Length: 260
Image (cartoon, rainbow, N blue to C red; front, side, top):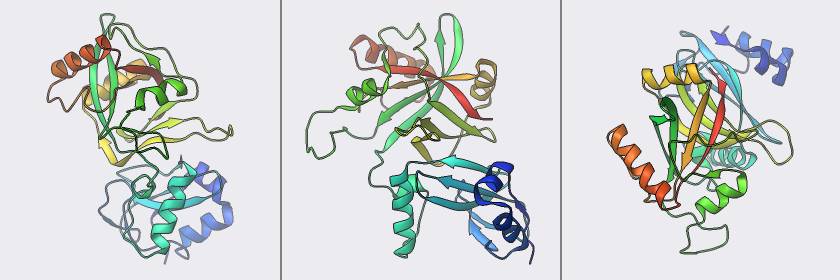
């Protein structure tokens, strides 16, 4: 039975016209699915459904989502994340997104907010790990989160009043007004891959999204575990960022938008 599927041009280019037509005809598409964005059930026979292709260096996973949640698109993801998701599916486990299944993915807390920079209100993301980050193979107690980010090109932030510089190849993925991922360039120079990916697409405030549309960029700040904390208001978030900057525990980068 034909499905109410949206297959974008970029997804069709990746999977080929023949496979796309099979999907639209219902041969290879499920009638019911768990939306890859909101995690609630969907039915491709009764409601518009987006095809979402997660692509790694060697692996690709086709997922489905409510068209009202996310448009049909190709999402670059780290290869180890996709491999973890495939292993979970083949083992018969109840799967989440690729980022949720990968043991290699550090758990990061991400907060969106508006910050005053040079007299202008700017959209920002503040990233803080949910626990100390040690080097792979180390049982440390040394938290190397900022050290690793500096090696990636994030700049030390000593004054939040000054915007951090752009970081080449990095971007923030927004789709349908929701935050999906922070993308980084892969080592091999192919498509970008997810450095951080939301377990569920993050709803952002209207004023934040408006500021992003005006600026065309997002200021991404990062601090080690415990430096910022969960702040209920933007003024308290700014105070925590100022303290982290004053003590040398804040890095940042300016990133363009990927998506809409």
